[in-house]
Amino acid sequence: MTGLTDASGVEGLPRRVVVISDLSEPRDGPSVIALRNAGMLADRGLSVEYFCGDFGRNEELARCGITLHAVGASDLRSSSFARAVVKGLYNVPAARRLKSLIRAKDTPETLYHVHNWSKILSPSIFDALRPVMNRVILTAHDYFLACPNGGYFHFQEGRPCTTRPLSLSCLGANCDRRSRLEKIWRIARDIERRILMDLSGAGAMVLAVHEGMVPLLERGGIPADAIKVLRNPVQPWSDARVHAEANHSFLFVGRLEHDKGVLLLAEAAKQANVPITFVGEGALASEISEIYPAARIAGFKDRDGLKEIAAETRCLVVPTRSRETFSLVAYEAFTSGIPVIISDFAATRDEILEQGVGLSCNPYETGGLSRTLVDLAADDGRIAKMSVKGFHDREVLALSSQDWERRLLDIYRQQIQSAGTRQEAPIRRSRRVTVSIPLLG
Image 1 (cartoon, rainbow, N blue to C red):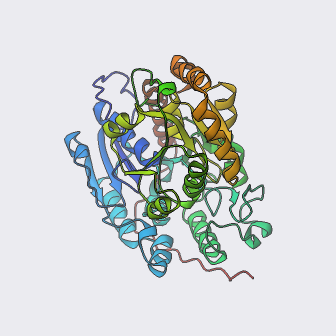
Image 2: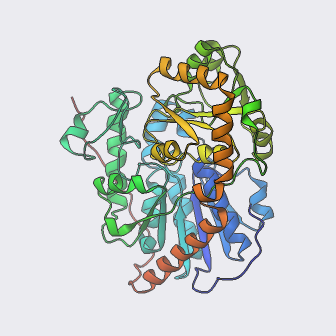
Image 3: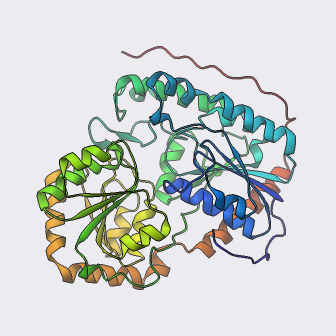
């Protein structure tokens, strides 16, 4: 949490905020931002409640005076396929808990901020939020509000998708990460989400975490006037510059899953014969070790643990195999003095290259990434130049926590004031919406 106790600027803010996210622990970028969001509001003296899909195992929230509501469910990826299909379309316990919370405690001065919902909570939360939609803010950490597969990416062909979501071309495309059957399920979920939460005139606000997301969100049917851009706040891993040129190990931080490009990175590191550490958890940990036995699998690390590993890092690698919306870890790295290798499909790729703090890679070409690893392993001068540039310009290249807080609070004021001009819908029990679609050949 931020530790900020400044109570200035509270006028015009909602008196109560419910932060909604799949996870209660900082396991990925969206959960890190959601928790920082909740902590900042509590430090400002607002009444904060945290509604999460997992088991709520985060004692820090209670210590900060934040009321926790945990559904008590696991990530869909840890469930059987049949169970994941059902719960991923409509998580009944999540909907019931959120509806009950809204009925019991909602006021005209309560705002609901949704950060992530696709891994546990499901579109069912939008069923619960419909009566208060004009007091809802949704941060788009990915593209699931616009695109069925969440990435605006044709995973089977390894290229960005330019198709309009739910068009005939989209419906017929075998573009999912895993299979055509899962694409059909994702289409059903996207249709259900659109029925439960129609953003056209509903009053909800969507926050894109990068300017490059805006045209893609609009293509997915979100009105331009419902979108604002608020980049993620960046908290460097180190207050002093990491002397990356003196280090040897490369680093990956994130989920150990296919869409993060970790198997390709393991193979590339093996070919380059460079040391590498994988920080994170996921289904592919054992496969990474099989591909490159010398790779270090560090598991999940809190911020202190990550700081220790960062101090020994030469370069961070982010080989995400879809459209990366922001890549918080890349910004946390280069503002600490650690250069980055960023995916060609990241929204922030061009600015990272232009600022001279990193290089890029095609996350579908093992050989190219391997050659880049070899080059950087041998070029201390280049590493030092990027390290100094990232650390020296950290305040210019990234949004500070203070600036992010100020801008987010301004957005809260605008949303709660705008809601006051609209007629509130009565809070009543909404019926479950069932969506069915024909199987596509």
